Image (tube, rainbow, N blue to C red):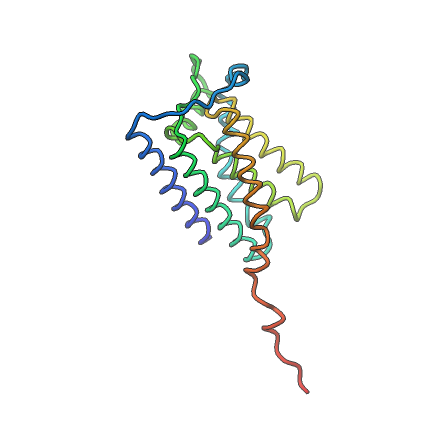
Length: 205
Protein backbone atom coordinates (compact mmCIF):
# COMPACT_ATOMS: atom_id res chain seq x y z
CA UNK A 1 0.00 0.00 0.00
CA UNK A 2 3.01 2.29 0.22
CA UNK A 3 2.85 2.85 -3.54
CA UNK A 4 -0.78 3.99 -3.24
CA UNK A 5 0.07 6.61 -0.63
CA UNK A 6 2.96 7.91 -2.72
CA UNK A 7 0.81 8.13 -5.84
CA UNK A 8 -1.90 10.02 -3.96
CA UNK A 9 0.62 12.52 -2.62
CA UNK A 10 1.99 13.14 -6.12
CA UNK A 11 -1.52 13.46 -7.53
CA UNK A 12 -2.57 15.98 -4.91
CA UNK A 13 0.57 18.05 -5.43
CA UNK A 14 0.51 18.04 -9.23
CA UNK A 15 -3.24 18.19 -9.84
CA UNK A 16 -3.91 20.77 -7.16
CA UNK A 17 -0.76 22.73 -7.92
CA UNK A 18 -1.52 22.94 -11.64
CA UNK A 19 -5.05 24.18 -10.97
CA UNK A 20 -3.76 26.80 -8.53
CA UNK A 21 -1.06 27.95 -10.94
CA UNK A 22 -3.33 28.28 -13.97
CA UNK A 23 -5.93 30.13 -11.90
CA UNK A 24 -3.34 32.85 -11.28
CA UNK A 25 -3.41 34.01 -14.91
CA UNK A 26 -5.96 34.42 -17.69
CA UNK A 27 -4.22 32.63 -20.57
CA UNK A 28 -6.41 29.84 -21.96
CA UNK A 29 -6.28 27.68 -25.06
CA UNK A 30 -9.23 26.45 -27.08
CA UNK A 31 -9.51 22.67 -27.30
CA UNK A 32 -13.04 22.45 -28.70
CA UNK A 33 -13.74 20.77 -32.03
CA UNK A 34 -17.02 20.71 -33.98
CA UNK A 35 -17.70 17.13 -32.85
CA UNK A 36 -17.70 18.15 -29.19
CA UNK A 37 -20.94 20.05 -29.65
CA UNK A 38 -22.72 16.90 -30.84
CA UNK A 39 -22.05 14.96 -27.63
CA UNK A 40 -25.13 14.84 -25.39
CA UNK A 41 -24.98 15.94 -21.77
CA UNK A 42 -25.63 13.05 -19.36
CA UNK A 43 -24.89 14.06 -15.76
CA UNK A 44 -25.64 10.56 -14.45
CA UNK A 45 -22.53 9.35 -16.31
CA UNK A 46 -20.59 10.88 -13.43
CA UNK A 47 -21.17 7.58 -11.59
CA UNK A 48 -18.92 5.84 -14.11
CA UNK A 49 -16.45 8.72 -14.12
CA UNK A 50 -16.08 8.52 -10.35
CA UNK A 51 -15.38 4.77 -10.47
CA UNK A 52 -11.71 5.32 -11.38
CA UNK A 53 -10.47 5.14 -7.74
CA UNK A 54 -12.21 1.77 -7.38
CA UNK A 55 -10.42 0.53 -10.48
CA UNK A 56 -7.04 1.64 -9.17
CA UNK A 57 -7.59 0.12 -5.72
CA UNK A 58 -8.21 -3.27 -7.37
CA UNK A 59 -4.55 -3.38 -8.44
CA UNK A 60 -3.53 -6.02 -5.84
CA UNK A 61 -6.09 -8.42 -7.32
CA UNK A 62 -4.53 -8.22 -10.77
CA UNK A 63 -0.83 -7.57 -10.16
CA UNK A 64 0.60 -10.74 -8.70
CA UNK A 65 4.07 -9.69 -7.60
CA UNK A 66 5.60 -6.83 -5.60
CA UNK A 67 7.58 -5.91 -8.70
CA UNK A 68 4.40 -5.43 -10.71
CA UNK A 69 2.89 -3.28 -7.98
CA UNK A 70 5.98 -1.09 -7.74
CA UNK A 71 6.13 -0.73 -11.51
CA UNK A 72 2.45 0.23 -11.65
CA UNK A 73 2.96 2.87 -8.97
CA UNK A 74 5.90 4.36 -10.88
CA UNK A 75 3.91 4.33 -14.11
CA UNK A 76 1.06 6.22 -12.45
CA UNK A 77 3.50 8.84 -11.17
CA UNK A 78 4.90 9.34 -14.67
CA UNK A 79 1.38 9.71 -16.10
CA UNK A 80 0.55 12.31 -13.45
CA UNK A 81 3.74 14.29 -14.02
CA UNK A 82 3.36 14.33 -17.81
CA UNK A 83 -0.30 15.32 -17.50
CA UNK A 84 0.73 18.09 -15.11
CA UNK A 85 3.01 19.53 -17.77
CA UNK A 86 0.07 19.54 -20.16
CA UNK A 87 -2.21 21.23 -17.62
CA UNK A 88 0.24 24.06 -17.05
CA UNK A 89 1.25 24.43 -20.70
CA UNK A 90 -2.25 24.27 -22.20
CA UNK A 91 -4.76 25.48 -19.61
CA UNK A 92 -8.31 25.46 -20.91
CA UNK A 93 -11.83 26.20 -19.77
CA UNK A 94 -14.20 23.28 -19.40
CA UNK A 95 -17.00 22.75 -21.93
CA UNK A 96 -20.19 24.66 -21.25
CA UNK A 97 -22.76 22.75 -19.20
CA UNK A 98 -26.46 23.21 -20.07
CA UNK A 99 -29.20 23.69 -17.51
CA UNK A 100 -29.38 20.60 -15.35
CA UNK A 101 -32.43 19.00 -13.73
CA UNK A 102 -32.23 18.09 -10.07
CA UNK A 103 -31.87 14.48 -8.99
CA UNK A 104 -29.31 11.74 -8.48
CA UNK A 105 -27.48 12.46 -11.73
CA UNK A 106 -27.13 16.13 -10.89
CA UNK A 107 -25.79 15.32 -7.43
CA UNK A 108 -23.16 12.94 -8.81
CA UNK A 109 -22.20 15.48 -11.45
CA UNK A 110 -21.56 18.09 -8.77
CA UNK A 111 -19.27 15.66 -6.95
CA UNK A 112 -17.31 14.97 -10.14
CA UNK A 113 -17.14 18.66 -10.95
CA UNK A 114 -15.77 19.42 -7.47
CA UNK A 115 -13.10 16.71 -7.77
CA UNK A 116 -11.94 17.95 -11.17
CA UNK A 117 -10.92 21.44 -10.04
CA UNK A 118 -10.35 23.90 -12.92
CA UNK A 119 -8.41 24.03 -16.18
CA UNK A 120 -6.80 20.55 -15.82
CA UNK A 121 -8.11 19.24 -19.11
CA UNK A 122 -5.34 18.34 -21.58
CA UNK A 123 -4.59 15.47 -21.46
CA UNK A 124 -7.36 13.78 -19.49
CA UNK A 125 -5.60 12.33 -16.45
CA UNK A 126 -8.70 10.30 -15.65
CA UNK A 127 -8.57 8.57 -19.03
CA UNK A 128 -4.79 8.14 -18.93
CA UNK A 129 -4.91 6.37 -15.57
CA UNK A 130 -7.87 4.20 -16.59
CA UNK A 131 -6.08 3.19 -19.80
CA UNK A 132 -2.88 2.35 -17.95
CA UNK A 133 -4.77 0.31 -15.36
CA UNK A 134 -6.79 -1.61 -17.95
CA UNK A 135 -3.68 -2.55 -19.93
CA UNK A 136 -1.69 -3.49 -16.82
CA UNK A 137 -4.45 -5.55 -15.22
CA UNK A 138 -5.53 -7.39 -18.37
CA UNK A 139 -2.29 -9.33 -18.82
CA UNK A 140 -3.06 -12.04 -16.28
CA UNK A 141 -6.80 -12.60 -16.78
CA UNK A 142 -9.06 -14.46 -19.20
CA UNK A 143 -10.67 -12.93 -22.24
CA UNK A 144 -13.91 -12.07 -20.42
CA UNK A 145 -12.07 -10.18 -17.70
CA UNK A 146 -9.98 -8.42 -20.36
CA UNK A 147 -13.12 -7.26 -22.13
CA UNK A 148 -14.60 -6.09 -18.83
CA UNK A 149 -11.49 -4.05 -18.00
CA UNK A 150 -11.32 -2.52 -21.46
CA UNK A 151 -15.04 -1.77 -21.31
CA UNK A 152 -14.60 -0.12 -17.92
CA UNK A 153 -11.80 2.10 -19.22
CA UNK A 154 -13.84 2.99 -22.30
CA UNK A 155 -16.81 3.77 -20.07
CA UNK A 156 -14.69 6.16 -18.02
CA UNK A 157 -13.47 7.82 -21.21
CA UNK A 158 -17.01 8.17 -22.55
CA UNK A 159 -18.26 9.52 -19.24
CA UNK A 160 -15.62 12.27 -19.31
CA UNK A 161 -17.29 13.52 -22.49
CA UNK A 162 -20.88 12.91 -21.41
CA UNK A 163 -20.54 15.01 -18.25
CA UNK A 164 -18.86 17.77 -20.26
CA UNK A 165 -15.70 17.58 -18.20
CA UNK A 166 -13.40 17.07 -21.18
CA UNK A 167 -13.11 17.62 -24.90
CA UNK A 168 -12.47 14.84 -27.41
CA UNK A 169 -8.85 16.00 -27.74
CA UNK A 170 -8.35 15.53 -23.99
CA UNK A 171 -9.74 12.01 -24.01
CA UNK A 172 -7.71 10.88 -27.03
CA UNK A 173 -4.44 12.25 -25.69
CA UNK A 174 -5.19 10.81 -22.26
CA UNK A 175 -5.64 7.32 -23.71
CA UNK A 176 -2.47 7.75 -25.76
CA UNK A 177 -0.54 8.88 -22.69
CA UNK A 178 -1.59 5.87 -20.64
CA UNK A 179 -0.76 3.42 -23.43
CA UNK A 180 2.60 5.02 -24.22
CA UNK A 181 3.74 5.08 -20.60
CA UNK A 182 2.91 1.40 -20.23
CA UNK A 183 4.67 0.51 -23.47
CA UNK A 184 7.79 2.46 -22.57
CA UNK A 185 8.08 1.08 -19.03
CA UNK A 186 6.66 -2.43 -19.17
CA UNK A 187 10.11 -3.89 -18.47
CA UNK A 188 10.24 -2.24 -15.04
CA UNK A 189 8.30 -5.00 -13.31
CA UNK A 190 10.90 -7.56 -14.36
CA UNK A 191 13.91 -5.45 -13.45
CA UNK A 192 12.44 -4.56 -10.04
CA UNK A 193 12.10 -8.20 -9.00
CA UNK A 194 15.02 -9.68 -7.01
CA UNK A 195 17.26 -12.11 -8.78
CA UNK A 196 15.83 -15.30 -7.36
CA UNK A 197 18.50 -17.44 -8.93
CA UNK A 198 21.21 -15.33 -7.34
CA UNK A 199 19.56 -15.59 -3.93
CA UNK A 200 19.20 -19.36 -4.05
CA UNK A 201 21.54 -21.31 -1.74
CA UNK A 202 24.50 -22.93 -3.39
CA UNK A 203 24.34 -26.69 -3.85
CA UNK A 204 26.64 -28.88 -1.80
CA UNK A 205 29.65 -30.06 -3.75
